[in-house]
Amino acid sequence: MIDNRTTGGSGQPGPATSAATPRSQGKPADPDPDPSALARCTGLDAAGFADRYWSREPLLSRAAGTGADFSDLLSAAAVDELVSRRGMRTPFLRMAKAGSVLPASSFTRSGGTGASIGDQVADDKVLEQIAGGATLVLQALHRTWPPLVAFGTELAAELSHPVQINAYVTPPESQGFAPHYDTHDVFVLQVTGRKHWLVHEPVVPAPLPEQQWEKHRDAVTSRSRQAPAIEVTLEPGDVLYLPRGYLHSATALGELSIHLTVGVHPVTRYTLIRELVAAAAADPELRGSLPMGVDLSDPAVLAPWLAQAAEALTRIAADPDHEQLSRVAERVGAELTRNTRPAPIAPLAQAALVASLTDDTPFQLRPGLRVNRQREHDALLIRFLDKEISLPPAMQPALELILTGRALTAADLPELSSEEQLGLARRLLREAVTVPECAVLECAVLECSPPEDGPGSVPLRIPGA
Ligand SMILES: O=C(O)CCC(=O)C(=O)O
Image 1 (tube, rainbow, N blue to C red):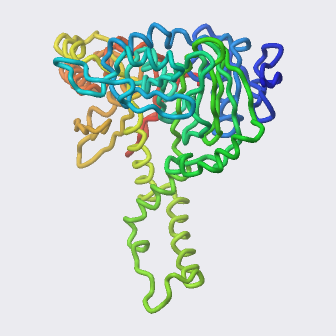
Image 2 (cartoon, helix red, strand yellow):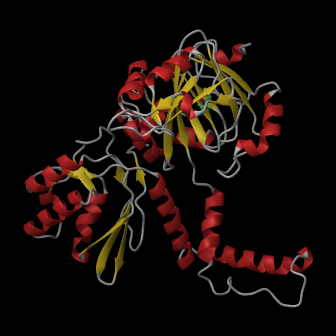
Image 3 (cartoon, rainbow, N blue to C red):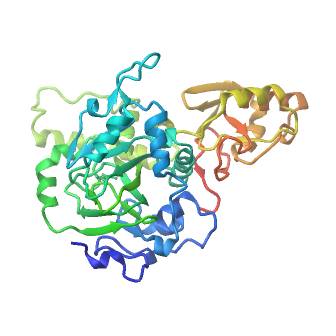
């Protein structure tokens, strides 16, 4: 039964139950003809979403209130193309039916001569499985489907946490997955058709990646038999935000349903503790041995030593100039770099541009690229992705200007001769630190934080967010 409260009646965004709060609690985003990715997901400005909902409360945003429409991001025709013409392989796709995941052999086979690897999608088998009621999941579309590559890059920059995007394609009157929770937050974007969702309160609030639902199967099953916290039918353009841990399951209604699930993998306080402890290995005091001749399994014996170790960690954490604290920040930055994909580049177009570059060719920082710069032994070290390059320190002002994300030409680069300007512009294009101005990815221009002295990452944000 559908809880009528969940439909919002007036079509205004509103709570499904007390657990899903109305958008009116935050500041509605200005009616913007070109809303940001986050505003499309929430109908709110970034501050309104951050203050009230982020990582805290479910949020239901109705298309009737936000005017959202996601048909530019994916369509049934796009799913057909992905399944039949792109040679997709597992684990980029999965299928599930009535709560069970199907074996890959039931929807894959070899692609024949010249493409014989056996785990490629078999379009005819997918057709058969969908006709039999199975749900198709296309995974990691933020990597492979251009509109979602752009959307995912923009959203990750706005949230400053990594995102992934999967699509769920469910035939009428069918359910793919059993009730479960995810260890990442989700924005569920209904693209086409209608899907009925049941959501239950977490059995493990804010679970970490190592706290998967399968380890709590009995608790999940028993909670999912209770009355749901939220019961809602999503229609095209509706979005449901669920912080990690909320149990969910969904059934397509009378027509084919396609939804996108944007998973947000947050950096957590636990990440900080983990990295703080890792950085503490550099501290000789914290490497010290515990006393001999005592029972180290006795809590009473351990207590003062534990208090002392915790105090040393607190000292590190409380001192903004502490060397170990910079190390924690570096390690968090490295994790974000590993998990966040910058905008794609076009290697051939980029190489052609390097060859033809003049002092008035516009270029910009590659959107979504995290860049760490550091002065070391009279060199300026630039770290990004898994690469490191070294530049003469005199190029720092020019580099800082590039890191602002603005569109520039070589002639704009300060404090360099025209030969050095062209040399730096060519080098950064060849290293894929910069790209032709918005030629590769249609996206918002990203701004960087003001330059700092010493080591520092460049947190990217959307102007005005
Ligand atoms: O549609 C389904 O069966 C489940 C969807 C889901 O778990 C998700 O979108 O995260």
